Image (tube, rainbow, N blue to C red):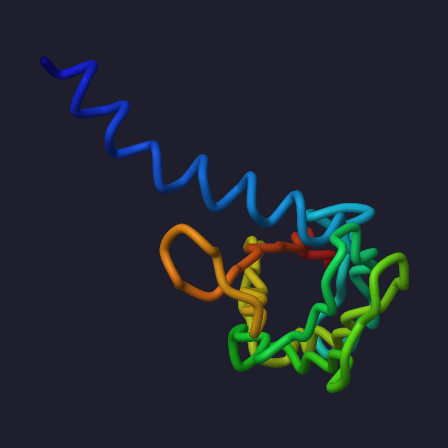
Length: 128
């Protein structure tokens, strides 16, 4: 019975992952910024390609106060690539951490009607 309940719990997660993977493909979903000194601002980016047969558009990218994210505001056509740029400000942190960027698309999962979402992250190590 527990296995069945666990499988039913995972079904929406697997379904969303399959929808996301058929919509866009990120070059990487995790970036390591390496060693960062207090006061540094580090720039990086996540690049993705629209691998679907439909137009894709990002609604919003949500992250913490230490990160400024900029994403394409327009439509990304099938086969086109785009970049989500971000700047990490280490002044707002006191130690090593994994920071998440949650990307919400205007495109919906046809099964649930919910927006397609992708969860990206970056890490850094504190440099003395």
